[in-house]
Image (cartoon, rainbow, N blue to C red; front, side, top):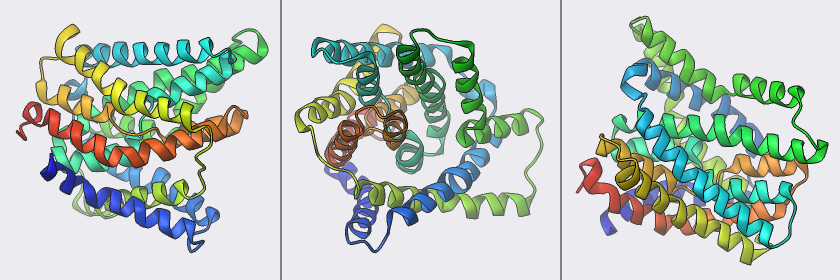
Length: 314
């Protein structure tokens, strides 16, 4: 546990550095927004494309893996929704809270950290987790909020969700990389160097951006945020572990271990973007991101140490 903690510490140290830069005003919200754009549209996309171009769809597509993650995440999503509805809040707020409980920071924190800690073979399972999060649950929150407001789910809403997925740079870069791989086209040396250099900026850039963005977050509604953080950091990985190891046993135990580690990641920043866009409980989401990220310094290390035997690290 201590050894894993020391390995994860540099990642959280960079997050803390970004947080300090944001809190002191040295890194303004505008600067954070532009750094996030650079990482999201360029550095992370280059990293994902390069990884995907060296994989084949047959290597990473595992339906048992997908069903295990989808089932476990769905159960936690329903649990968080039920708890929210028991408190007599609306469907819109319940959908946002459920999103906080299951959507981890896979893109900005999970990909760089898990690939470095668990090896490049982790990229395939992480991509599958990211795809399910974006395609299924990223679409679900939009459908629930807009459907609740309009009283129905229109074709326009579904069309908007589809276009949003097609424009997402993470989906685009993974898809293009897999297409490149499918044609067995070798990546030219200059292109590979370009992608390597640009992709290398993703890890420090993403971690710094996470910290700087947290500087603007507040810890309001602490009790609810603490429950949602507990759901994300503890309930979600436990549910995924039960699904992947017991209920829907994933034959590739390494992939199962990576899936569990990915489920332990703190709540993603894009949940706040959606909450702010629709005007639904942004302060609650802000507090959840802040608390879950701070607590994950310990919990993520614990979960990675727990799955280490599955991934060959134990």
